Length: 229
Figure (cartoon, rainbow, N blue to C red):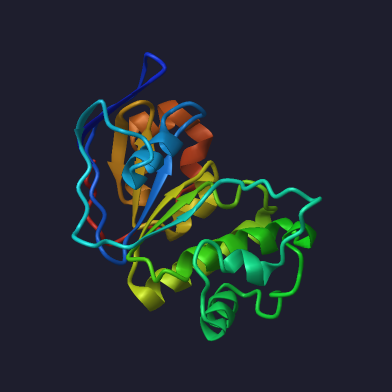
């Protein structure tokens, strides 16, 4: 994204966003409610048109997307296996491998409506991985999970990027968990307020202004990458 602006309903949601993602990199987007995190993700997907600026993707880039939530009508039950076949039927070995990679092997016949929150999010991730994405976009994937479930999910994301080399952009409200696996953190409030490696962003005045002084104590150990703030 280069100098990206997004206006929705007459309100400027994002202004002057510059963001690039490398192969194998996890970028975490943090910010208060209404700061434009999900809008930025949708703009990167192409679902929201920019009002100014550009979004450029590498040629034939394969993008996987895990939404914040997905409503499935309980009166029209669908199995995990059938869900993974939407919109294009996937070979059975590929389905098995995707479910195994995210730690829910053997659930193909289970109804989606009968899954726990953690299982549901992992199935959404498995579906995204079936396309073998080079870029994975995650919109608050742990919002409905408890602390242990969120930690386990972050572990799966970290393993996936190490195994596949895909880039990851993840929206999160979980300051501690999301920053632990991030290579780079971007703090949004309509525009980028601060950006860099986790431990240095946590010490930045803009980060403290957004999340409070106590949030700085949640920073992980120093990361070897240079700060881009």
